[in-house]
Image (cartoon, rainbow, N blue to C red; front, side, top):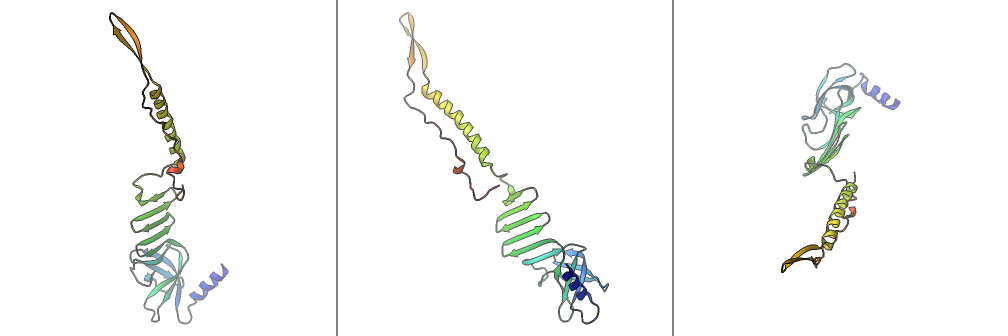
Length: 204
């Protein structure tokens, strides 16, 4: 920490040719990727200081500093333009490479790769917008399915063993009769195993 203080003091020295200034951030323009800031040596405010080499670029790495935090602003040879060289605290960070992007902030992390997305915050992890609802709880699903299997198997057992008592009229009297059980036996349902449908590479 003491080394950082010394560096800041050296950069803020008013004597000699100025190549960098320590400033506090007054405003951040994320679309233009610039900041307005005030030098701590009380010289004139700096407006539209670039956060990237190419202003208004939509790719690369960009750190958005917190308002009120310190930044070090460097200048090109003629001093006509400035760029943020170092930041103290950041509000968010953005990395964009082709159609792949990652945005990190205090609210969470967002990853987007083409049409695939994963957004993480303090409450949930959401894949591809979350339109399909939450992930299945494999163990709870297995228990429910096996309860259903037991019910179905009880019905199958009753079906396979069931006989009908009938009456038949022979002359003036009736005689009881029995219809044989079905000759087509229904097969018992097999219990479910979570390994049949669980992807162990994605866990929650």
